Length: 329
Image 1 (tube, rainbow, N blue to C red):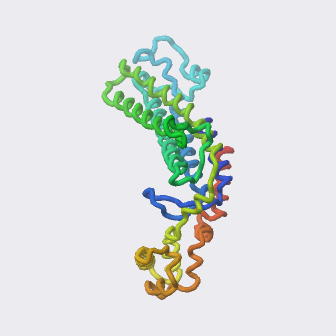
Image 2 (cartoon, rainbow, N blue to C red):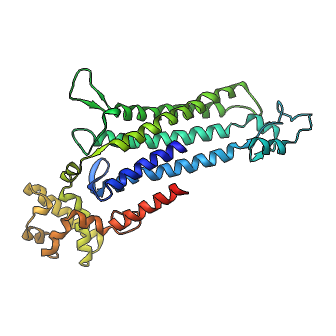
Image 3 (cartoon, one colour):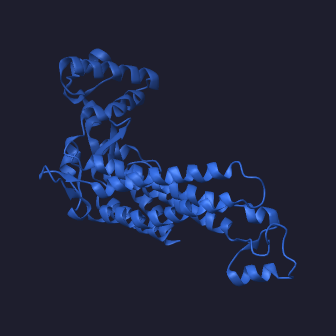
């Protein structure tokens, strides 16, 4: 949990640096709508909130004392189990001795929480790997987190992020193995249960290793706002163009269909949406007027999404306040 919070602090610092820096947002790995670096990187802050909260629940559910359950039927020694639980820092005692010696839910829950955390890290690393590629060039990783090719000296390979991405598969596989081992056991204890150690201990060690690495990569990366801005095509404001028509009184579906026609027209003319003339647009709908040019202002498009969780500057600052407040708890 402490390592996760360290990564969250790094994400928050990077978001603060590029909170209002425009960049394209993606769905289906296709450019979709404008967003900002701050908004994008904060999208990886909140999964870690859920990860930490899951680990807190796992810690609570693991704090059940099995001591006193004996081999499976309890013990003939009159020990004060609740006193032992208090002395040893447990929250409660296992109410059934058979369940106590066979229960490994706490191990499976930890392995799941760790695997899902690793999956969140993998998704973050996957996109950072894309963003630092020459095709994107949105960011540059510090030399401490890359290796140079042994054959091609110009290559900067993001191997720290690649290895982190690979660890998610390992933790997922170990979780699956643990669940498969548990699924067919009869009640009480069976020797199979010694196989709970590897997935639990390895998950702990792996996350303890990779969380600080990803935090370091985030803390030291360099943003390239000019590269991000160069990918902000007017087509990314297609939804805003439909909203423009909706504001003129058209139903949303009809507005969407008309903008799709405008997009096809621009493709046939080999120009961008913003380069279509007023006459071109009015051939699609006479509701297009001189003020349509304002739609293609990226910062205006960002500012229009003034809802909680949106891209407007006020919404982004509120999100930052929420993130800081969570970290301060």
